[in-house]
Structures are given as C-alpha cells and as structure tokens.
Image 1: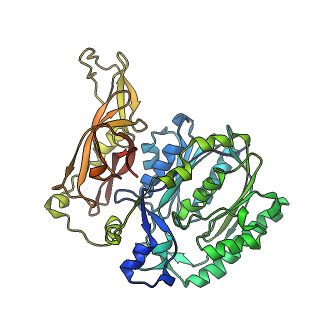
Image 2: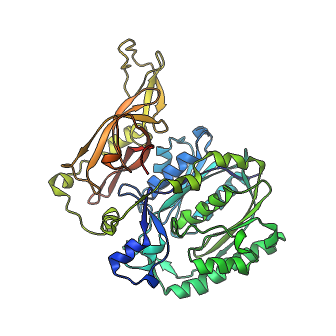
Image 3: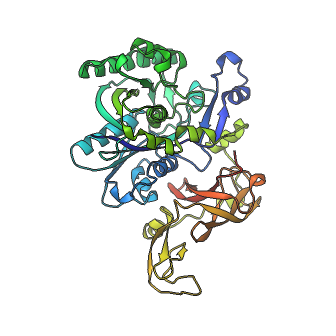
Length: 482
C-alpha cells in the first residue's frame, strides 16, 4: 500500500482583510471578495514556509528514513539554486537522497505528489517528502491580489503507517494560457477572468474527475468528499454539482480564510479534508493548472494520527490582523523603503563559510557532550560545562526542533527593520543550550521574560545586488501571542 504517511501545513500568522485592500484602492463593495487572505511576513518566502510545513510533517519520524525530497513552487527565490536542497539542509536530511524542484505551474504540487508515489511504487525510494509552497504576487488593485494567499504544505509518501492510500489518478495537460509570468515579471499576468473560469476551471476539472471515474469504474457516490482546488466560490460549487457531489460533500476551498496558495493549494485543502475523514472514506482531489490532476485516496485506520498534529485547523487558529495595506506592500517589497545607512550595509555570510558551516546555519545544529550531556550552540570542541571541560567528546545535536524560554529581550529602534522595532533576545533551550536570536511574529508589548518560544526558519538578509539570500533561525513566541 502506497500513500500519505504523514502531513504538515504552514499558514503565516498575518491575515489581510480584503476590505483593507478595497479601502486602500477606494473600491465599491461589489468589487470586494469576502473574507481575508494569509500574508507571509517580510522574512518569509516559499522556502521558509516549505521548511515549516516539513518540520510539522516529520515530527516523530526519523530524518534518516527520508530517501527523496520534492519541492513544488512557482515562486522559488532562486532561478538557479535548488530550493529542495536548501529545504533538505534546513530539515537536516541525509545527503544521499534524491532532490528535485517542480515548478512553472500551480499543478506542480500534485505533480510532485504523483512523482513521489511513482518512485515509492517502483522501489526507488522508501519514503519521499513532498513540500509545496507559494508566495505569488498580484498587481496592486488586481483580482489576483485579492485571491492569492501564502502558505505551505508537506506530505510524506511511503508504505508504512499509511493514513490515506492512493488508489488511482488521471491527468490532463493543456497549454491553456490563463496565467503566465515571464523571466522578467514579478507579478502574475492573466487573461480575462471570466474566460479563465468558463473555459478553464468549469471545463477541465469536471473532465479530469470524469476521466478518473471512467478509468477505475467509480462514481461520485463512492466518495465521501471532493477536494476541488478552485478559488472561485460560484464555480467551485458548480464543479461539484457537475460531477455529482452535493454541497455538503464538497470540501471548503479556504478562499475566505487563506486564499489560493498556488502549488500548495490542493494539498492544503486535501489536508483539511483528512482532518475530518473517517477510515474507509474515499476522497477525490482535483488540482488545476495547465490542465488537471485527479487523484483518488482511500482513508485507512491510521487516520487518527493526523488529529495529533497542528494541521490546518491549528494554523488557522494562530492569526493576527494586518491592518495596514502599506505595510503589506512593504512586506512584499512592492514599494521602495528608506532603509538608512545601517540598512544599506548588508553583511552576508561568505558562501564558502556557509558551506563549511551548513549544519550550524541551515539546520541549527550544535553539539552535545558525550561525557556530561551538556548541549551547546554553536559547535565547539570543548565542553562549556565548567565541571566537565571534555575535549573532542561531542556528538551532533539539533536545536531546530527544541522549544525554549525567553531569558531576556530588547527592542531596537536604531537598527533597520521592515516591521520596526527590531526585536532580539536570549533563548534558553529546554534540555540545555543558550543563544541569541531575532524574535519574529510578535509585538514588543506582548513579550515577557520566561515565555515559551520555538524556532522558525526565516530569511536573515537578501543582497539583491549579489543575488544572495541568507537564511537562519528566529524565535517565535508560542504563548500570549494571537
């Protein structure tokens, strides 16, 4: 049996009401979509969100068991540097694995999932991690700006402990020119939206679902839920009706709470469906993008393990309103910001140093003394315990998955920050170890000494002149912050 073994999701903390966008643009109410969309913080991108989802997915799973990693995104920060390689480094996976990036279509998420199941079925890999994330930009005032949301998903595909087996699939591929982005484009370009809905979603998605039904002798009544990756409310309901699903059997498309998260979108909605699924349920998943992928899953007795994770519901419960449209523009670098003299002097880690210290930087890897058990970061040869002092008696020790407590902190109004003040503090890790980190996804007034924090992989700097993006770990409060 091949299928989904584990899953993890990530939705950024910030939510931007579509009414806030409308107010900034001076629109009338009929032009405003309902609800809100998830917005990545200024130091987040598709890679950091994929790492966050991957960490959630791999909780209680040995990293050494992962044989391959596939990363699906249309907004990878690099045009020539493998995003899956960065993610593998941050997740501290084995170096002897297969890594691949799938891109250029929002259907890449289900494409990566199908490639993973093929690899496992063929015996080329035992466990394959599929990460998908997107942070797409629509032009200010466009419908795409309202629809697009930010988020990530991760699914582990294997044969042991399967929570949802893949029973079959059916794919369609068309060079349908609805959305496009050339090499020089930052923003999504699209053709007339009604044409996209009528000629794209309303025709391709039912065609793919019926193709799956015909291929395996199934019908809508054989499924407990339909997961349709369509961000348009009216069309979403219409597609379900076309293929024979009553409204109560069509999974909510999350457009009013998160938005269309690109390559991650179908996987995130599938995860939401799995959170309420029962053993024996069949779930239909239909993605969209230059055609469609239709997948049939059967839920197993192992599904209860999904409810022990944070999941989509947990991510949705952690939120904060982003009430400033101008701040959103600054987060996405859509308006030029005065950074001051200090902000212009970017000091980046030399690439050769980054390579040598990749476990220390990307994986937040430290060491633990074999003699006395004292953890320490960064890596050192000598144990810092004054009662020990052992030399060269160290073993690898990861801090990325450790929680901690805030020992002390400060807000810096002189250092440049997209969201001032810059906040940083000393973290005492549970089990030992101490280091200074930037604090993110919080307000200075919310912080207090002793509050719980966890680690989050984020962008540390971006030197656009040299094409270098630096990643490191920051501390995120997990209590007293909404």
